[in-house]
Length: 492
Ligand code: NAP
Ligand code: MG
Image (tube, rainbow, N blue to C red):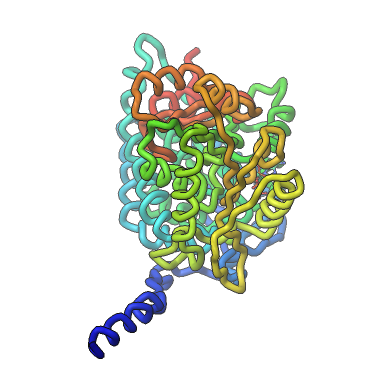
């Protein structure tokens, strides 16, 4: 009897086991104190004489300083890209271009642990994601477009595809190396040269990529990296020597860029924000749907343009689904991005944390009901508890505006027609998700949803062969797949 008692008494003790962290070693990446600009195949000091700091958002420690490129620096980078274009890159046999891209892809694979740790340190995303999603996809993009470099005539039979020239590329902070790959791989495969500006808060992997270009012996000037802030981006947009501008970021800056380029002979692609609907029908496999909802909005702290930030649930399954979802939320582990068990890492910057906090406050003020699981957050760094709102009206700001954080707005519907109407009631149109066992219903929905990508019984799934891009205020042009070649080619 005493023994039985002892055993029962030990059960709570088991449940109270301390959590054992599983940190990834950070010494695989050697971060220097300072990084210059990458122009003409060399690291150069900025003519501007200015520098800025990049911090780790999970600890607020200063990681390094990067050059803040001014107008003269941007001009030098564009000249270097023009020189490389004229002096041979565009004329190189396409199969030779392909070899460089393959080489870059292989080096990304070889250095993937280092790059994954760098990405998590500089941007705050969980190592599990940078290691298992960002890095494999970045390498896959280079492999995929390497394959296209010498097959452009097959992609466009009876036409003569030619490169555009110098491509200016501006990328955001949510998937720094992956967005770099989405931009650089197709541009180079088509024979263009590049000036790329990474985001102010996450320049590290782009700077390491500069080193990869040198390692791959890419001809000088084919890729140039200009770090800086929004003003650097502005210099690049206004530069008269660019032939193409590819931008991923906010709709606000996208509109500014479009105005700036009006009347100029510069090809433009914009990949902007989103407010995707993730639609769950009453016949869906609920546990599977819950995983998809969680992946849809809490993946990468919700810093995802195609995040499933509006959950539309069919009324008859609202209660069981919400119960399962809340239970699942309480198991998410928020904390150190370098811990291999972390599900939700740090918010990328103080500015983004403030924006999320402000929008969440508006949700409460407008009458929606907030739910957050019990969650202990680290003391330093920028964090936000995975949050969901019920009783959300379509007019609420949290149902209309892109929050770009781990915040889900839950709405309901009765009929498929109502689901379509609510899903499309947004100025955006980047992605959507449909959960149902019925194939015919998936097809019916896909025909009616105004979104560039519709996932069925899955969410946030990416592949370099699959085109990605928006409708309406989510932008235009496609990245990925054969479609991703066209924005970097001309045919006259
Ligand atoms: P953002 O300002 O549009 O930043 C995107 C890129 O554009 C960054 O490299 C940025 O540089 C640069 N930039 C800023 N102002 C510019 C200008 N006037 N001319 C040229 N380039 C400029 O986006 P954000 O401020 O980082 O984020 C704000 C919101 O944008 C987020 O809350 C989210 O809603 C949305 N967003 C969407 C995506 C997406 O993938 N679609 C990605 C990120 C953010 P700096 O970083 O140096 O300022
Ligand atoms: Mg940083």
